[in-house]
Length: 267
Image (cartoon, rainbow, N blue to C red; front, side, top):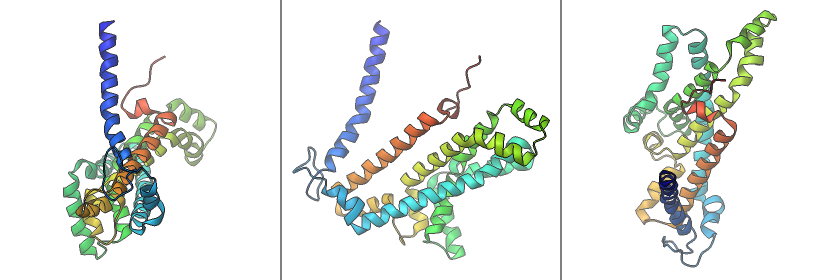
């Protein structure tokens, strides 16, 4: 009984420690002036309107963040799929090497990867272009869909493949009717993992954008020169809401225990 009480108390304190900063930031976003106070002074939703509608700088930054996040996540999935499939179906040294190279950027310190990409894009003459940012984030977060898709492929029951082959299905038909449907949740999980991290990433984008454009994270950094403003708190709330929505959807519709490394229960 005592152990259960202590466990409950620990979980309650942990939840409180997580909730307090979010409450402070949410309250600070309601200030009517240009300075953050908590509790907020003359609470208003004007800062939310500025961030999403009227303030051109923030609206442009949010648009750039969405373009980079969605495009880079989609590109990462498109690259990860053939790598994961080759590793699962063939398991050759070449496929293992390619998968390892695809995962390497995520293991590097972001500042090292960002500086290297900065030199690369400058050499190619495309430093500061939006599509260079998309490719950079796709390379950085390629490991996420590569891992989730690989987990999905490994979860396929080989008996299903044997049954399809017995019924005369070609490899293409087997892929379309057996493999792909069973890996859709893992593919979507990898996509959304990459999307959330891209939406929140700052270091690599700082180097590859070369001040030619701003995402929300870069705009927050640029706005710090004028001090902390309630609009920055709105941006922080946006990050929190997007992350909670995406991870909540993955937990609801994806195979979260397996994605987190747990083995399925044996019956």
